Length: 406
Image 1 (cartoon, rainbow, N blue to C red):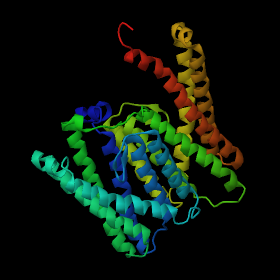
Image 2: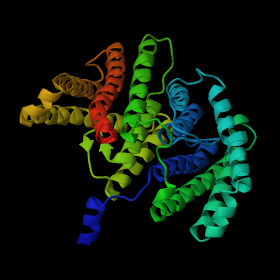
Image 3: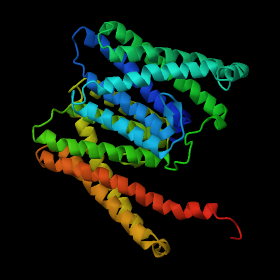
Image 4: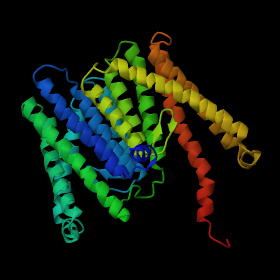
């Protein structure tokens, strides 16, 4: 028993990035299917726009981090990243502001699900590098054929259901969504086994776009914060409606992705253990439910996010100041300006995190307009942090690429 607990806390979780994202996507669709059963009989409310926004956000995240698009694998180029950020923005706005974008989210999801999955299905069956190769390998690759084919076929059906909302009854939609969620989770487990057996098959960073997964998540979080901050200004002026539960839910899903991908949490980085994966999936579950079923988890999630932001800010200040005091003067002599900027940026982010967390716990302490400005500033500084971290890594990369004797 002691060994099991020790492994849970310390053993590195063997969960490739693609499998982690698919697990969250599958969990989201499965939970949607399960929740639609009580929705069908009027026991629970249902926020359709929240689900559409969350689905678009996950599609965008796969494109940005992996180059995996609904139409196949692509190089992680700047245009693809920009397109992914734009789709994520549509998803975020769709979550926060009910009906603001009209039919745009449904149209985008239809394109992603139906034509995209049909193209992927045709590619799988007619590409010489896929179906025939997988058949020749046999074993787990036969499961890959079955799981991919099932996910593609169900995706085509889901696309029509999303675009034509009254095509099927809610109960039948719930059944199909539940099966679809199970199929995605099964595909995630199959891919995990394949990537562990054949590590060369995983290519999480194709193309020339060198932004790491951690920095990509900072980019996504920065865009999220800036959009949320900008939207809170007209919301607090009474010009737009707002779904607070979807805001909290999407933030929890972002936390969950960071935990599963790198072990990062609002209170610091931890080993990417199976315990961290479990906590990440728990956060994802709470976030997904909060997005789909309005108001049901607002109070507990408000407390969780508020406390995590305050603790994270305090811990960041302590670590940043201690690191600055303990650090030898040599690194600062080499590049004092960029390190000074990093130090100041981390402190500002920590203070903004504490202010945001405090406003969550004590709603009257800061006006809504001020909270919007804080969040917008937080997002902008996160984007600036990416620039600083990239600049710090640049000399190292140049040194590694330097040709001997030149």
